[in-house]
Image (tube, helix red, strand yellow):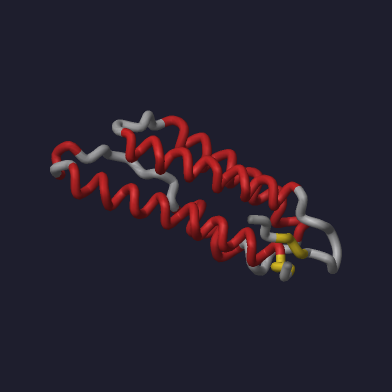
Amino acid sequence: MDRVDTKTTLSALWLFNLLNIIFRDIRQVAMKSEREMPRGGRLDQIPIGSVLFSLPLTCRIGRPEIIVAVQVTGGKTLSSAPSDLDNVLHLAIELVAMVAILWTAWTWPDGNHATARFTG
C-alpha cells in the first residue's frame, strides 16, 4: 500500500469534514425559509483554516492545534441536536471524520517519517 504524508492525510480529512458541513448547510437552507434559519455562526472557519494549515505546520505545532480544533468543532457540532434522519447521518459522518483527524494527529510521528497509511 502506498504511504501518504500525514499532513496530506490531515488536510484531506479536514476537507472531507468541511464538505460534509457545507452540503448539510445547503440542504438546510433549501428546506427552511429565511425566517426559520438559525442565527449565529457554526465556527466553520476552524475546519477551513485546518485544511490549509495542516500542510505547512510541523508535528510539534500542528498536533496541539489540531487537537484543539477538533475539540472546538466537535463541541459545536454536538451542541446542535439533529432535526431529522439526514442530519443524524451528517452528524455521524462529521464525528467519524473528527475521530479520524484526532487519531491521525495523535499518532503523527515526529521527525522525517511523517507518513500515515490509508486502510480500507
